[in-house]
Length: 375
Ligand SMILES: Cc1ncc(COP(=O)(O)O)c(C=O)c1O
Image 1 (cartoon, rainbow, N blue to C red):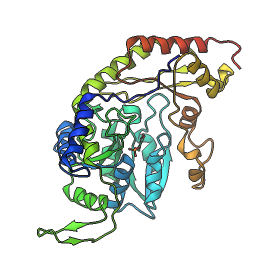
Image 2 (cartoon, rainbow, N blue to C red; image 1 turned 30 degrees about the horizontal axis):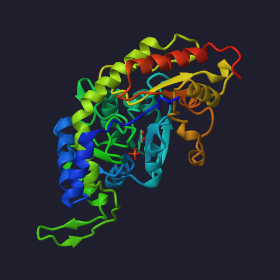
Image 3 (cartoon, rainbow, N blue to C red; image 1 turned 180 degrees about the horizontal axis):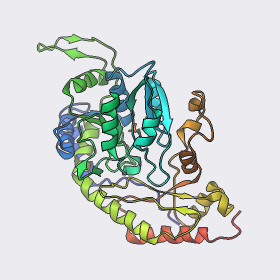
Image 4 (tube, rainbow, N blue to C red; image 1 turned 90 degrees about the vertical axis):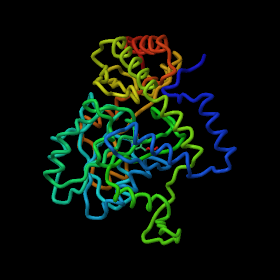
Protein backbone atom coordinates (compact mmCIF):
# COMPACT_ATOMS: atom_id res chain seq x y z
CA UNK A 1 0.00 0.00 0.00
CA UNK A 2 1.32 3.47 -0.78
CA UNK A 3 1.56 5.83 2.18
CA UNK A 4 0.37 9.41 1.94
CA UNK A 5 3.26 11.44 3.42
CA UNK A 6 2.53 14.35 5.75
CA UNK A 7 4.28 16.64 3.29
CA UNK A 8 5.78 16.57 -0.18
CA UNK A 9 7.32 19.42 -2.19
CA UNK A 10 5.74 20.16 -5.58
CA UNK A 11 8.62 20.27 -8.07
CA UNK A 12 8.22 19.82 -11.81
CA UNK A 13 9.69 20.37 -15.26
CA UNK A 14 10.04 24.12 -14.79
CA UNK A 15 12.26 23.72 -11.72
CA UNK A 16 14.25 21.02 -13.54
CA UNK A 17 14.70 23.32 -16.52
CA UNK A 18 15.77 26.21 -14.28
CA UNK A 19 18.44 24.04 -12.64
CA UNK A 20 19.68 22.85 -16.04
CA UNK A 21 20.03 26.44 -17.20
CA UNK A 22 22.13 27.37 -14.19
CA UNK A 23 24.32 24.28 -14.59
CA UNK A 24 24.87 25.13 -18.25
CA UNK A 25 25.62 28.79 -17.47
CA UNK A 26 28.87 27.98 -15.72
CA UNK A 27 27.95 30.20 -12.71
CA UNK A 28 26.70 27.94 -9.93
CA UNK A 29 27.06 29.71 -6.62
CA UNK A 30 25.74 33.11 -5.47
CA UNK A 31 25.17 35.28 -8.52
CA UNK A 32 22.46 36.65 -10.80
CA UNK A 33 19.76 34.13 -9.79
CA UNK A 34 20.20 35.01 -6.11
CA UNK A 35 19.93 38.68 -6.96
CA UNK A 36 16.82 38.01 -9.07
CA UNK A 37 15.14 36.00 -6.32
CA UNK A 38 15.95 38.65 -3.71
CA UNK A 39 14.23 41.23 -5.89
CA UNK A 40 11.31 38.95 -6.72
CA UNK A 41 10.72 38.18 -3.04
CA UNK A 42 10.92 41.87 -2.13
CA UNK A 43 8.33 42.63 -4.84
CA UNK A 44 6.13 39.76 -3.67
CA UNK A 45 6.27 40.71 0.01
CA UNK A 46 5.69 44.41 -0.66
CA UNK A 47 5.90 47.31 1.79
CA UNK A 48 9.13 48.54 0.25
CA UNK A 49 11.28 45.96 2.05
CA UNK A 50 14.50 44.48 0.71
CA UNK A 51 15.40 40.82 0.94
CA UNK A 52 18.70 38.99 1.44
CA UNK A 53 18.91 35.28 0.82
CA UNK A 54 20.63 32.75 3.07
CA UNK A 55 21.37 29.04 3.01
CA UNK A 56 18.72 28.54 5.73
CA UNK A 57 16.33 30.42 7.97
CA UNK A 58 18.56 29.40 10.86
CA UNK A 59 21.47 31.32 9.29
CA UNK A 60 19.21 34.28 8.52
CA UNK A 61 18.02 34.47 12.13
CA UNK A 62 21.55 34.04 13.48
CA UNK A 63 22.99 36.75 11.21
CA UNK A 64 20.12 39.07 12.16
CA UNK A 65 20.74 38.66 15.89
CA UNK A 66 24.49 39.22 15.40
CA UNK A 67 23.91 42.28 13.22
CA UNK A 68 21.62 43.76 15.87
CA UNK A 69 24.30 43.14 18.53
CA UNK A 70 22.05 40.82 20.52
CA UNK A 71 24.41 38.87 22.75
CA UNK A 72 25.55 38.04 26.28
CA UNK A 73 23.46 39.72 28.97
CA UNK A 74 20.47 40.14 26.64
CA UNK A 75 17.20 38.26 26.98
CA UNK A 76 15.14 37.26 23.96
CA UNK A 77 11.47 36.35 24.46
CA UNK A 78 10.13 33.53 22.30
CA UNK A 79 7.38 30.90 22.38
CA UNK A 80 8.04 27.54 24.04
CA UNK A 81 6.36 25.93 21.02
CA UNK A 82 8.41 26.06 17.83
CA UNK A 83 11.11 24.19 15.97
CA UNK A 84 14.24 24.22 18.10
CA UNK A 85 16.12 26.48 15.64
CA UNK A 86 14.14 29.44 17.00
CA UNK A 87 15.70 29.04 20.44
CA UNK A 88 19.05 27.65 19.31
CA UNK A 89 19.98 30.83 17.45
CA UNK A 90 19.47 32.82 20.65
CA UNK A 91 21.86 30.49 22.47
CA UNK A 92 24.30 30.68 19.55
CA UNK A 93 24.77 34.44 19.95
CA UNK A 94 25.20 34.11 23.73
CA UNK A 95 21.86 35.69 24.67
CA UNK A 96 19.36 34.08 27.06
CA UNK A 97 16.17 32.54 25.67
CA UNK A 98 13.10 33.47 27.74
CA UNK A 99 10.20 31.22 26.85
CA UNK A 100 6.52 32.08 27.09
CA UNK A 101 3.49 29.83 26.70
CA UNK A 102 1.28 29.72 23.60
CA UNK A 103 -2.42 29.35 22.86
CA UNK A 104 -3.55 25.72 22.47
CA UNK A 105 -5.46 26.30 19.24
CA UNK A 106 -3.37 28.97 17.47
CA UNK A 107 -0.04 27.71 18.91
CA UNK A 108 1.09 31.33 18.87
CA UNK A 109 2.24 33.58 21.69
CA UNK A 110 0.22 36.65 22.67
CA UNK A 111 1.21 40.14 23.69
CA UNK A 112 0.02 39.52 27.29
CA UNK A 113 2.42 36.61 27.65
CA UNK A 114 5.28 38.67 26.23
CA UNK A 115 4.45 41.67 28.42
CA UNK A 116 4.65 39.50 31.54
CA UNK A 117 8.11 38.26 30.53
CA UNK A 118 9.73 41.64 29.79
CA UNK A 119 12.59 42.61 32.13
CA UNK A 120 15.23 45.34 32.01
CA UNK A 121 17.42 42.82 30.15
CA UNK A 122 14.95 42.10 27.34
CA UNK A 123 16.42 43.17 23.98
CA UNK A 124 14.24 41.35 21.49
CA UNK A 125 11.02 39.42 20.92
CA UNK A 126 11.07 36.52 18.49
CA UNK A 127 7.46 35.60 17.66
CA UNK A 128 6.84 32.53 15.48
CA UNK A 129 3.98 32.41 12.98
CA UNK A 130 3.25 28.77 13.72
CA UNK A 131 2.31 26.64 10.71
CA UNK A 132 1.62 29.81 8.73
CA UNK A 133 -0.96 31.27 11.14
CA UNK A 134 -0.03 34.92 11.75
CA UNK A 135 0.63 36.12 15.28
CA UNK A 136 -1.41 39.20 16.14
CA UNK A 137 1.46 41.62 15.51
CA UNK A 138 0.18 45.17 16.05
CA UNK A 139 -0.06 44.85 19.87
CA UNK A 140 3.44 43.36 19.86
CA UNK A 141 4.83 46.19 17.73
CA UNK A 142 3.18 48.68 20.14
CA UNK A 143 4.65 46.94 23.19
CA UNK A 144 8.06 46.80 21.52
CA UNK A 145 7.96 50.51 20.82
CA UNK A 146 6.96 51.30 24.41
CA UNK A 147 9.69 49.05 25.86
CA UNK A 148 12.31 49.75 23.15
CA UNK A 149 12.52 46.13 22.05
CA UNK A 150 13.48 44.72 18.67
CA UNK A 151 10.89 42.48 17.01
CA UNK A 152 12.44 39.77 14.83
CA UNK A 153 9.76 37.55 13.34
CA UNK A 154 10.40 33.88 12.75
CA UNK A 155 8.28 33.43 9.63
CA UNK A 156 10.09 30.24 8.64
CA UNK A 157 6.68 28.61 8.20
CA UNK A 158 4.81 31.61 6.87
CA UNK A 159 5.88 32.67 3.38
CA UNK A 160 2.73 34.00 1.70
CA UNK A 161 0.79 34.39 4.96
CA UNK A 162 -1.00 37.68 5.47
CA UNK A 163 -1.88 39.91 8.41
CA UNK A 164 -4.76 42.33 7.78
CA UNK A 165 -4.34 41.78 4.05
CA UNK A 166 -0.62 42.59 4.09
CA UNK A 167 2.09 39.95 3.58
CA UNK A 168 4.08 38.86 6.59
CA UNK A 169 7.47 40.52 6.14
CA UNK A 170 6.10 43.79 4.77
CA UNK A 171 6.12 45.69 8.08
CA UNK A 172 9.80 46.63 7.80
CA UNK A 173 11.21 45.03 10.96
CA UNK A 174 13.44 41.96 10.40
CA UNK A 175 11.41 38.91 9.33
CA UNK A 176 13.04 35.58 8.44
CA UNK A 177 11.71 32.87 6.12
CA UNK A 178 12.68 29.26 5.40
CA UNK A 179 12.67 27.52 2.03
CA UNK A 180 13.42 24.03 3.34
CA UNK A 181 11.69 21.31 1.25
CA UNK A 182 8.80 21.04 3.73
CA UNK A 183 7.95 24.72 3.41
CA UNK A 184 5.27 26.26 1.18
CA UNK A 185 7.95 27.10 -1.39
CA UNK A 186 11.41 25.60 -1.51
CA UNK A 187 14.94 26.30 -2.68
CA UNK A 188 15.84 22.80 -1.32
CA UNK A 189 17.68 24.40 1.61
CA UNK A 190 17.44 28.15 1.93
CA UNK A 191 16.17 31.12 3.87
CA UNK A 192 15.76 34.86 3.70
CA UNK A 193 15.44 38.03 5.70
CA UNK A 194 13.13 40.88 4.73
CA UNK A 195 13.70 44.31 6.24
CA UNK A 196 13.43 47.97 5.34
CA UNK A 197 16.58 48.85 7.31
CA UNK A 198 19.29 49.12 4.65
CA UNK A 199 22.07 49.68 7.19
CA UNK A 200 21.10 46.49 8.97
CA UNK A 201 20.97 44.61 5.67
CA UNK A 202 24.43 45.82 4.68
CA UNK A 203 25.84 44.46 7.93
CA UNK A 204 23.87 41.24 7.46
CA UNK A 205 25.40 40.85 3.97
CA UNK A 206 28.85 41.08 5.51
CA UNK A 207 28.07 38.55 8.24
CA UNK A 208 26.56 36.26 5.59
CA UNK A 209 29.90 35.99 3.76
CA UNK A 210 33.08 35.88 5.85
CA UNK A 211 32.77 39.47 7.08
CA UNK A 212 34.07 40.64 3.71
CA UNK A 213 33.58 44.20 2.54
CA UNK A 214 34.86 45.63 -0.76
CA UNK A 215 35.49 49.24 -1.69
CA UNK A 216 34.62 50.78 -5.05
CA UNK A 217 37.88 49.45 -6.53
CA UNK A 218 37.09 45.92 -5.36
CA UNK A 219 39.71 45.91 -2.60
CA UNK A 220 38.81 43.52 0.18
CA UNK A 221 38.69 44.17 3.90
CA UNK A 222 37.33 42.08 6.79
CA UNK A 223 36.13 44.55 9.42
CA UNK A 224 34.33 41.89 11.50
CA UNK A 225 33.59 38.21 11.78
CA UNK A 226 31.33 36.67 9.18
CA UNK A 227 30.18 33.14 8.42
CA UNK A 228 29.44 31.18 5.25
CA UNK A 229 25.70 31.50 4.93
CA UNK A 230 25.14 32.39 1.26
CA UNK A 231 22.69 30.67 -1.07
CA UNK A 232 23.79 29.23 -4.43
CA UNK A 233 22.28 30.22 -7.79
CA UNK A 234 21.15 26.61 -8.37
CA UNK A 235 18.90 26.95 -5.32
CA UNK A 236 17.74 30.45 -6.22
CA UNK A 237 16.75 29.30 -9.71
CA UNK A 238 14.43 26.71 -8.13
CA UNK A 239 13.13 29.42 -5.80
CA UNK A 240 12.23 31.74 -8.68
CA UNK A 241 9.97 29.08 -10.18
CA UNK A 242 8.54 28.13 -6.80
CA UNK A 243 7.75 31.76 -5.97
CA UNK A 244 5.77 32.09 -9.20
CA UNK A 245 3.68 29.13 -8.03
CA UNK A 246 3.41 30.10 -4.36
CA UNK A 247 -0.02 31.75 -4.41
CA UNK A 248 -1.52 28.78 -6.23
CA UNK A 249 0.14 26.39 -3.75
CA UNK A 250 -1.22 28.37 -0.81
CA UNK A 251 -4.73 28.55 -2.29
CA UNK A 252 -4.76 24.78 -2.60
CA UNK A 253 -3.41 24.36 0.93
CA UNK A 254 -6.28 26.51 2.23
CA UNK A 255 -8.87 24.48 0.31
CA UNK A 256 -7.47 21.25 1.71
CA UNK A 257 -7.25 22.63 5.26
CA UNK A 258 -10.84 23.86 5.10
CA UNK A 259 -11.92 20.41 3.92
CA UNK A 260 -10.12 18.90 6.92
CA UNK A 261 -11.86 21.28 9.31
CA UNK A 262 -15.23 20.24 7.79
CA UNK A 263 -14.53 16.51 7.74
CA UNK A 264 -12.58 15.82 10.93
CA UNK A 265 -14.87 14.31 13.54
CA UNK A 266 -16.14 16.22 16.57
CA UNK A 267 -14.54 14.27 19.39
CA UNK A 268 -13.76 15.15 23.01
CA UNK A 269 -10.17 13.96 22.58
CA UNK A 270 -9.53 16.00 19.45
CA UNK A 271 -8.47 19.66 19.06
CA UNK A 272 -8.80 20.94 15.49
CA UNK A 273 -6.62 23.90 14.44
CA UNK A 274 -8.15 27.31 13.71
CA UNK A 275 -8.35 29.07 10.38
CA UNK A 276 -8.15 32.82 9.82
CA UNK A 277 -7.92 34.99 6.71
CA UNK A 278 -4.39 35.02 5.34
CA UNK A 279 -3.41 31.67 6.89
CA UNK A 280 -1.05 29.90 4.46
CA UNK A 281 -1.51 26.48 6.08
CA UNK A 282 2.09 25.33 6.13
CA UNK A 283 0.99 22.40 8.28
CA UNK A 284 -2.21 20.94 9.63
CA UNK A 285 -1.51 20.04 13.26
CA UNK A 286 -4.23 18.54 15.43
CA UNK A 287 -4.03 17.60 19.11
CA UNK A 288 -5.27 14.24 20.32
CA UNK A 289 -5.57 13.32 23.97
CA UNK A 290 -3.79 10.01 23.50
CA UNK A 291 -3.91 9.25 27.25
CA UNK A 292 -7.73 9.53 27.19
CA UNK A 293 -7.79 7.15 24.22
CA UNK A 294 -5.54 4.71 26.08
CA UNK A 295 -3.14 4.70 23.16
CA UNK A 296 0.33 6.18 22.78
CA UNK A 297 1.02 8.66 19.97
CA UNK A 298 3.46 6.17 18.54
CA UNK A 299 0.80 3.47 18.37
CA UNK A 300 -1.69 5.92 16.86
CA UNK A 301 0.85 6.85 14.18
CA UNK A 302 1.62 3.22 13.42
CA UNK A 303 -2.08 2.46 13.06
CA UNK A 304 -2.59 5.48 10.84
CA UNK A 305 0.27 4.23 8.69
CA UNK A 306 -1.41 0.85 8.36
CA UNK A 307 -4.38 2.79 6.98
CA UNK A 308 -2.08 4.44 4.43
CA UNK A 309 -1.60 7.75 6.24
CA UNK A 310 1.76 9.23 7.22
CA UNK A 311 1.99 11.77 10.04
CA UNK A 312 4.51 13.93 11.87
CA UNK A 313 5.12 15.54 15.27
CA UNK A 314 5.60 19.35 15.31
CA UNK A 315 6.94 19.83 17.97
CA UNK A 316 7.99 18.75 21.45
CA UNK A 317 7.93 21.81 23.75
CA UNK A 318 11.38 23.37 23.48
CA UNK A 319 11.87 24.27 27.14
CA UNK A 320 11.86 20.57 28.04
CA UNK A 321 14.90 19.76 25.88
CA UNK A 322 18.05 19.09 27.96
CA UNK A 323 19.72 22.25 26.68
CA UNK A 324 16.85 24.44 27.85
CA UNK A 325 16.39 22.63 31.16
CA UNK A 326 19.94 23.79 31.84
CA UNK A 327 18.50 27.34 31.82
CA UNK A 328 16.22 26.31 34.69
CA UNK A 329 13.11 25.32 32.74
CA UNK A 330 11.13 22.18 33.53
CA UNK A 331 7.76 20.42 33.35
CA UNK A 332 4.78 22.54 34.36
CA UNK A 333 6.31 25.85 33.24
CA UNK A 334 4.22 26.20 30.06
CA UNK A 335 1.15 23.94 30.25
CA UNK A 336 -0.25 24.67 26.78
CA UNK A 337 3.08 24.18 24.99
CA UNK A 338 3.60 20.97 26.95
CA UNK A 339 0.12 19.73 26.09
CA UNK A 340 0.75 20.46 22.43
CA UNK A 341 4.12 18.73 22.67
CA UNK A 342 2.49 15.58 24.03
CA UNK A 343 -0.64 15.58 21.90
CA UNK A 344 0.30 17.10 18.57
CA UNK A 345 0.02 15.19 15.33
CA UNK A 346 0.64 16.60 11.86
CA UNK A 347 -1.67 15.25 9.17
CA UNK A 348 -0.83 15.19 5.44
CA UNK A 349 -1.13 18.59 3.77
CA UNK A 350 0.58 19.55 0.52
CA UNK A 351 -0.67 21.12 -2.70
CA UNK A 352 -0.64 17.96 -4.83
CA UNK A 353 -3.08 16.19 -2.50
CA UNK A 354 -6.49 15.27 -3.86
CA UNK A 355 -9.80 15.93 -2.09
CA UNK A 356 -10.13 12.14 -1.75
CA UNK A 357 -6.85 12.08 0.21
CA UNK A 358 -8.35 14.38 2.85
CA UNK A 359 -11.41 12.12 3.00
CA UNK A 360 -9.15 9.10 3.48
CA UNK A 361 -7.17 10.76 6.28
CA UNK A 362 -10.31 11.95 8.08
CA UNK A 363 -11.88 8.49 7.81
CA UNK A 364 -8.70 6.93 9.22
CA UNK A 365 -8.56 9.40 12.14
CA UNK A 366 -12.29 8.82 12.84
CA UNK A 367 -11.77 5.08 12.80
CA UNK A 368 -8.89 5.25 15.28
CA UNK A 369 -10.71 7.68 17.57
CA UNK A 370 -13.62 5.30 17.89
CA UNK A 371 -11.47 2.24 18.69
CA UNK A 372 -12.36 1.17 22.21
CA UNK A 373 -9.58 -1.19 23.16
CA UNK A 374 -6.67 0.33 21.35
CA UNK A 375 -3.69 -0.52 23.51
C1 LIG B 1 9.72 27.96 13.12
C2 LIG B 1 11.00 27.62 12.46
N1 LIG B 1 12.07 28.40 12.64
C3 LIG B 1 13.25 28.14 12.03
C4 LIG B 1 13.39 27.05 11.21
C5 LIG B 1 14.70 26.80 10.57
O1 LIG B 1 14.60 26.81 9.17
P1 LIG B 1 15.77 26.23 8.27
O2 LIG B 1 15.60 24.76 8.23
O3 LIG B 1 15.58 26.87 6.94
O4 LIG B 1 17.05 26.64 8.91
C6 LIG B 1 12.32 26.20 10.98
C7 LIG B 1 12.44 25.02 10.14
O5 LIG B 1 11.62 24.14 10.13
C8 LIG B 1 11.09 26.49 11.63
O6 LIG B 1 10.02 25.70 11.45
